[in-house]
Image (cartoon, rainbow, N blue to C red):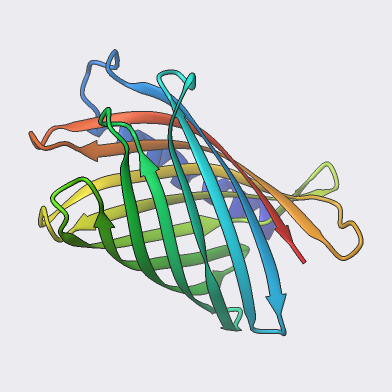
Amino acid sequence: MNRLRGFLVLTCVGGMIGLGTFCQLPLGWAGDDFQMWNTIEIRKKLGSTWELFFRPEIRLRDNATKLFYHEFRQGVRWKPSKYLTVGLNYLFSRNASSGKPLDEHTGELDITPKAALGPLELSVRGRVALRTIQRSAGEQEYQIRLMPKIACPTQIAGHKVTPYVANDAFYDYTAKAWNQHRTYLGLAIPLPQVKGVSPSLDLYYMLQQQRNVRKDWNSNHVLGTQLTVQF
């Protein structure tokens, strides 16, 4: 009963987030783009509290027909308890959305406190990033990201699944404004273990809203996958 109540709460929260985001969009949807983002994350545990990870990602735009972006994020995470994760990452990305490829080198510090509220799992990932984008102004840019997330582990047909909602908000110190929001509705699915390897699959829909140089907001509709392998 508690899990059912938590699932209903999560569904209502997701619906409210989706409705609120929909109401912020311009009436014309013709300029929206459908994209696909696909990720693999490989994790290697180092004892009980440390892990290394490598996370490549590719993104397709123009109705998921054109590769325009890829990135490689790698780093180390420290998990002193189930209520806290601290990560130090390096990101390389190449973005061709403007017509010419822009390379980015970024250092990131992640701090993610977690808590439980009945059947719900709550977390807020805070990220501070120092970005260097080549072939642009060449200046270093600071960025802060806050990503609150609500998840509800439950059973469907005897299988454990975890539906979740989240919103990743970006603050750009160069623009001195919140310039991007990513609203997620997703489902995490554990897969059978094989010889000490624990895989899982994450499927999500994400509405991406970005503030352009004219201070208008554009939106993209994204279907995403992430395959995680931990050993």
